[in-house]
Length: 356
Image 1 (cartoon, rainbow, N blue to C red):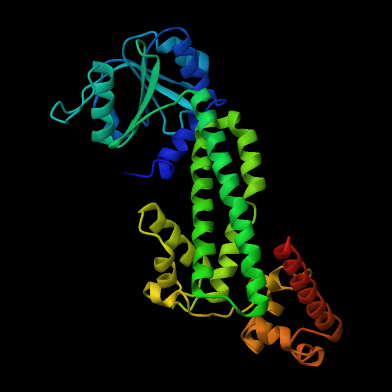
Image 2 (cartoon, rainbow, N blue to C red):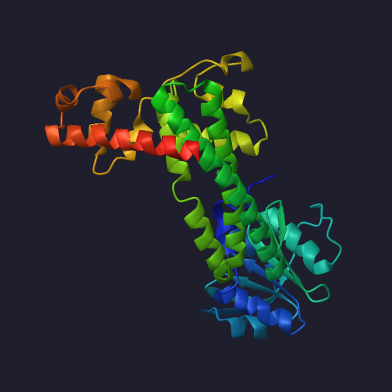
């Protein structure tokens, strides 16, 4: 199925979300127990299907949309829905275009959308529903109460997954300091992370539909997943042997595969070039140290890259003396001591967390 929360359709959903001028006009029509047909886009393809009606050419307001919808014909606006172009227009799409809709208004809307690719909004007087048609997409706007229930349920699920992920992340950190990490542990943490990010994306989709009513949901979501994607990219940078060196691109590939329901720990291992079968999951691997070094205060990215280039692995950085750290470009004695002490404190903290 097409991802309706991307591209032009996403913009239209945002434009039709609660709290927007366009949504207020539609709500006025519904509250008056009326119906309507609105086309967003005055392209040549649309205008070729129009007969009759009269040209308005005025700025859109909710009141104008409500009044013009009292007439039987369609209303044509510009793509953004900020100007009303035509009212009471008759639309004559190709009758050979298949449609499963039963009512004349909705059948016309679907055929116009399929023929032109533009968004058509059909407002049902009898069912009190708003249906969006664009290309082959058919989407019915859902009631706010239902959306809020779904969003809050998704937040509860996200909280549980996020809590488990944090524990797995702490355990991974402790194993990294002991140099006891296996491919399985790396892939399991990333697998859990991908689940968290996909649940978060589902909630983002609800927020698009909720509009101004989704502000509290958005605040909770942002607080919960603030650094999840960043942590995942550091883990990938630490362990990946793939030819593709950009952690963000590797993560995006994993996220996409998860949407297609083919993602598991072995697949993640393949993405990182850490193995191609379950037999490779027990092999030990060592981190470069990007994730741990980024947690240290006031350590620029260039310094981190210089450290990894010099010592290759986190274990090498941990074993290095103050003098050896001082020899790395950009690191003086003060910063060398800060790195050494910072990593030691981090190791002690992870040990205490693990012992709880």
